[in-house]
Length: 246
Image (cartoon, rainbow, N blue to C red; front, side):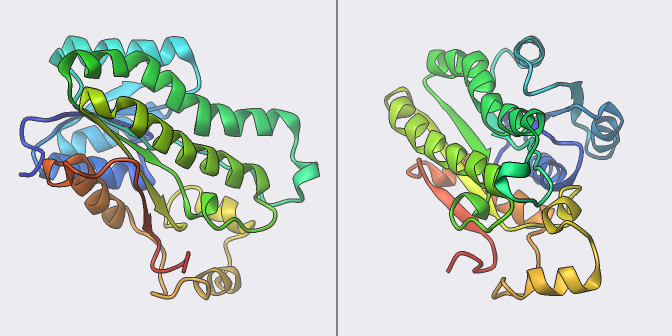
Protein backbone atom coordinates (compact mmCIF):
# COMPACT_ATOMS: atom_id res chain seq x y z
CA UNK A 1 0.00 0.00 0.00
CA UNK A 2 2.69 2.44 -1.07
CA UNK A 3 0.18 5.07 -2.17
CA UNK A 4 -2.26 4.75 0.73
CA UNK A 5 -3.97 8.06 1.41
CA UNK A 6 -2.77 9.61 -1.87
CA UNK A 7 -5.02 11.17 -4.49
CA UNK A 8 -4.18 10.96 -8.20
CA UNK A 9 -5.37 12.05 -11.62
CA UNK A 10 -4.37 9.79 -14.53
CA UNK A 11 -5.11 11.20 -17.98
CA UNK A 12 -5.78 8.72 -20.73
CA UNK A 13 -6.54 6.28 -17.93
CA UNK A 14 -9.21 4.36 -19.81
CA UNK A 15 -6.88 2.14 -21.84
CA UNK A 16 -3.32 1.02 -22.49
CA UNK A 17 -0.54 2.26 -20.24
CA UNK A 18 -2.92 4.61 -18.45
CA UNK A 19 -5.20 1.76 -17.42
CA UNK A 20 -2.18 -0.17 -16.15
CA UNK A 21 -1.16 2.81 -14.04
CA UNK A 22 -4.69 3.20 -12.66
CA UNK A 23 -4.83 -0.49 -11.69
CA UNK A 24 -1.49 -0.32 -9.88
CA UNK A 25 -2.31 2.94 -8.11
CA UNK A 26 -5.61 1.54 -6.87
CA UNK A 27 -3.95 -1.70 -5.75
CA UNK A 28 -1.43 0.39 -3.79
CA UNK A 29 -4.13 2.39 -2.02
CA UNK A 30 -4.52 5.62 -4.03
CA UNK A 31 -7.81 7.31 -4.83
CA UNK A 32 -7.80 7.85 -8.61
CA UNK A 33 -9.68 9.96 -11.13
CA UNK A 34 -9.57 8.28 -14.54
CA UNK A 35 -9.64 11.16 -17.01
CA UNK A 36 -10.29 10.21 -20.62
CA UNK A 37 -11.84 11.53 -23.81
CA UNK A 38 -13.47 8.09 -24.18
CA UNK A 39 -15.96 8.04 -21.33
CA UNK A 40 -17.01 4.44 -21.99
CA UNK A 41 -13.39 3.31 -21.53
CA UNK A 42 -12.97 5.42 -18.40
CA UNK A 43 -16.15 4.02 -16.90
CA UNK A 44 -15.05 0.43 -17.61
CA UNK A 45 -11.76 0.94 -15.75
CA UNK A 46 -13.59 2.81 -12.98
CA UNK A 47 -15.99 -0.11 -12.55
CA UNK A 48 -13.08 -2.56 -12.52
CA UNK A 49 -10.89 -0.66 -10.07
CA UNK A 50 -13.24 1.45 -7.98
CA UNK A 51 -11.81 4.66 -9.40
CA UNK A 52 -13.73 7.72 -10.57
CA UNK A 53 -14.39 8.29 -14.28
CA UNK A 54 -14.16 11.86 -15.56
CA UNK A 55 -14.55 13.04 -19.15
CA UNK A 56 -11.65 15.26 -20.17
CA UNK A 57 -10.05 16.63 -23.34
CA UNK A 58 -6.50 17.32 -22.17
CA UNK A 59 -5.88 19.66 -25.11
CA UNK A 60 -8.76 21.97 -24.09
CA UNK A 61 -8.18 24.50 -21.31
CA UNK A 62 -11.77 24.61 -20.08
CA UNK A 63 -11.98 20.82 -19.96
CA UNK A 64 -8.75 20.56 -17.96
CA UNK A 65 -10.00 23.27 -15.59
CA UNK A 66 -13.20 21.26 -15.05
CA UNK A 67 -11.11 18.15 -14.37
CA UNK A 68 -9.02 19.95 -11.77
CA UNK A 69 -12.13 21.40 -10.14
CA UNK A 70 -13.73 17.96 -9.99
CA UNK A 71 -10.64 16.62 -8.20
CA UNK A 72 -10.62 19.49 -5.72
CA UNK A 73 -14.35 19.09 -5.08
CA UNK A 74 -13.84 15.37 -4.50
CA UNK A 75 -10.72 15.46 -2.34
CA UNK A 76 -9.70 19.05 -1.57
CA UNK A 77 -6.21 18.30 -2.89
CA UNK A 78 -4.31 16.47 -5.64
CA UNK A 79 -1.16 14.60 -4.61
CA UNK A 80 -0.25 12.99 -7.96
CA UNK A 81 -0.79 13.89 -11.60
CA UNK A 82 0.08 11.44 -14.38
CA UNK A 83 0.11 13.09 -17.81
CA UNK A 84 -0.38 9.91 -19.81
CA UNK A 85 -2.80 10.87 -22.60
CA UNK A 86 -1.02 10.92 -25.95
CA UNK A 87 -1.43 10.43 -29.67
CA UNK A 88 0.79 9.98 -32.70
CA UNK A 89 0.65 10.56 -36.41
CA UNK A 90 0.99 7.67 -38.84
CA UNK A 91 4.52 6.84 -40.05
CA UNK A 92 5.35 9.06 -43.02
CA UNK A 93 8.01 11.51 -44.21
CA UNK A 94 8.05 14.59 -41.99
CA UNK A 95 6.98 16.95 -44.76
CA UNK A 96 3.89 14.86 -45.52
CA UNK A 97 2.31 15.09 -42.06
CA UNK A 98 -0.86 17.22 -42.41
CA UNK A 99 -0.78 20.49 -40.47
CA UNK A 100 -3.92 19.66 -38.53
CA UNK A 101 -2.37 16.38 -37.37
CA UNK A 102 0.83 18.18 -36.33
CA UNK A 103 -1.26 20.62 -34.31
CA UNK A 104 -3.22 17.79 -32.68
CA UNK A 105 -0.08 15.84 -31.72
CA UNK A 106 1.43 18.85 -29.98
CA UNK A 107 -1.88 19.84 -28.38
CA UNK A 108 -2.35 16.41 -26.80
CA UNK A 109 1.28 15.52 -26.10
CA UNK A 110 2.68 18.92 -25.11
CA UNK A 111 0.05 21.60 -24.49
CA UNK A 112 -1.76 19.21 -22.14
CA UNK A 113 1.22 19.21 -19.76
CA UNK A 114 1.06 23.01 -19.61
CA UNK A 115 -2.70 23.02 -19.07
CA UNK A 116 -2.52 20.45 -16.27
CA UNK A 117 0.32 22.38 -14.62
CA UNK A 118 -1.62 25.63 -14.86
CA UNK A 119 -4.55 24.10 -12.98
CA UNK A 120 -2.85 21.76 -10.50
CA UNK A 121 0.54 23.27 -9.64
CA UNK A 122 -0.95 26.16 -7.60
CA UNK A 123 -2.68 23.61 -5.34
CA UNK A 124 0.51 21.58 -4.99
CA UNK A 125 2.47 24.74 -4.16
CA UNK A 126 -0.04 25.56 -1.45
CA UNK A 127 0.46 22.07 -0.01
CA UNK A 128 4.24 22.23 -0.49
CA UNK A 129 4.09 18.69 -1.88
CA UNK A 130 3.16 16.75 -4.98
CA UNK A 131 4.36 14.40 -7.69
CA UNK A 132 3.90 14.93 -11.42
CA UNK A 133 4.71 12.11 -13.84
CA UNK A 134 4.87 12.73 -17.59
CA UNK A 135 4.61 9.70 -19.87
CA UNK A 136 7.17 10.41 -22.57
CA UNK A 137 8.71 7.77 -24.85
CA UNK A 138 11.93 6.24 -26.09
CA UNK A 139 11.03 8.23 -29.22
CA UNK A 140 12.10 11.35 -27.35
CA UNK A 141 15.52 9.85 -26.55
CA UNK A 142 16.35 7.75 -29.60
CA UNK A 143 14.10 8.87 -32.46
CA UNK A 144 13.44 6.77 -35.52
CA UNK A 145 12.53 7.97 -39.04
CA UNK A 146 8.97 8.73 -40.16
CA UNK A 147 7.58 9.58 -36.73
CA UNK A 148 9.39 12.90 -36.67
CA UNK A 149 6.85 15.19 -35.04
CA UNK A 150 5.74 12.55 -32.54
CA UNK A 151 9.42 12.08 -31.62
CA UNK A 152 9.77 15.82 -31.20
CA UNK A 153 6.68 16.08 -28.99
CA UNK A 154 8.09 13.44 -26.63
CA UNK A 155 11.50 15.14 -26.61
CA UNK A 156 9.65 18.31 -25.62
CA UNK A 157 7.99 16.42 -22.78
CA UNK A 158 11.36 15.20 -21.44
CA UNK A 159 12.80 18.72 -21.48
CA UNK A 160 9.62 20.09 -19.90
CA UNK A 161 9.93 17.47 -17.16
CA UNK A 162 13.46 18.59 -16.28
CA UNK A 163 12.53 22.28 -16.43
CA UNK A 164 9.48 21.71 -14.22
CA UNK A 165 11.55 19.67 -11.77
CA UNK A 166 14.10 22.46 -11.30
CA UNK A 167 11.48 25.16 -10.88
CA UNK A 168 9.16 23.25 -8.56
CA UNK A 169 11.72 21.54 -6.33
CA UNK A 170 11.80 24.40 -3.78
CA UNK A 171 8.04 23.90 -3.27
CA UNK A 172 8.46 20.19 -2.54
CA UNK A 173 7.02 19.09 -5.88
CA UNK A 174 8.79 16.33 -7.78
CA UNK A 175 8.48 15.92 -11.57
CA UNK A 176 9.64 12.84 -13.46
CA UNK A 177 9.04 11.10 -16.78
CA UNK A 178 8.74 7.53 -18.00
CA UNK A 179 10.05 6.55 -21.42
CA UNK A 180 8.43 3.31 -22.56
CA UNK A 181 9.03 1.51 -25.80
CA UNK A 182 5.87 0.70 -27.74
CA UNK A 183 3.44 -1.65 -26.05
CA UNK A 184 0.13 -3.43 -26.48
CA UNK A 185 -1.86 -0.20 -26.52
CA UNK A 186 -4.22 1.45 -29.02
CA UNK A 187 -1.23 3.33 -30.48
CA UNK A 188 0.82 0.24 -31.43
CA UNK A 189 -0.60 -0.20 -34.92
CA UNK A 190 -0.13 3.52 -35.58
CA UNK A 191 3.55 3.32 -34.64
CA UNK A 192 4.16 0.33 -36.89
CA UNK A 193 2.03 1.54 -39.79
CA UNK A 194 0.48 -1.93 -40.02
CA UNK A 195 0.03 -4.62 -37.39
CA UNK A 196 1.38 -7.78 -39.00
CA UNK A 197 3.56 -10.60 -37.60
CA UNK A 198 6.39 -9.38 -39.82
CA UNK A 199 6.19 -5.80 -38.56
CA UNK A 200 5.99 -6.99 -34.95
CA UNK A 201 9.07 -9.18 -35.42
CA UNK A 202 10.96 -6.28 -36.97
CA UNK A 203 9.98 -3.97 -34.11
CA UNK A 204 10.79 -6.52 -31.41
CA UNK A 205 14.21 -7.13 -32.92
CA UNK A 206 15.23 -3.64 -31.73
CA UNK A 207 14.37 -4.44 -28.07
CA UNK A 208 17.09 -6.46 -26.28
CA UNK A 209 14.65 -8.05 -23.80
CA UNK A 210 12.56 -9.14 -26.76
CA UNK A 211 9.11 -7.88 -25.78
CA UNK A 212 6.97 -4.78 -25.75
CA UNK A 213 6.39 -2.60 -22.68
CA UNK A 214 3.23 -3.68 -20.88
CA UNK A 215 0.68 -1.67 -18.87
CA UNK A 216 1.90 -3.60 -15.81
CA UNK A 217 5.49 -2.50 -16.45
CA UNK A 218 4.34 1.10 -16.62
CA UNK A 219 2.15 0.79 -13.54
CA UNK A 220 5.04 -0.57 -11.48
CA UNK A 221 7.45 2.15 -12.60
CA UNK A 222 4.87 4.90 -12.15
CA UNK A 223 3.99 3.69 -8.66
CA UNK A 224 7.64 3.84 -7.59
CA UNK A 225 8.29 7.33 -8.97
CA UNK A 226 5.08 8.72 -7.44
CA UNK A 227 5.60 7.09 -4.06
CA UNK A 228 7.58 8.36 -1.08
CA UNK A 229 10.22 5.73 -1.91
CA UNK A 230 11.33 8.07 -4.72
CA UNK A 231 11.49 11.13 -2.46
CA UNK A 232 14.99 12.03 -3.72
CA UNK A 233 14.23 11.51 -7.42
CA UNK A 234 13.16 14.44 -9.58
CA UNK A 235 13.89 15.39 -13.18
CA UNK A 236 14.50 11.77 -14.18
CA UNK A 237 13.44 10.28 -17.52
CA UNK A 238 13.31 6.58 -16.64
CA UNK A 239 13.56 4.19 -19.58
CA UNK A 240 11.05 1.32 -19.35
CA UNK A 241 12.09 -0.10 -22.67
CA UNK A 242 13.77 -3.49 -22.33
CA UNK A 243 17.09 -1.97 -23.34
CA UNK A 244 15.84 -0.33 -26.55
CA UNK A 245 17.83 2.89 -25.92
CA UNK A 246 21.16 1.19 -25.19
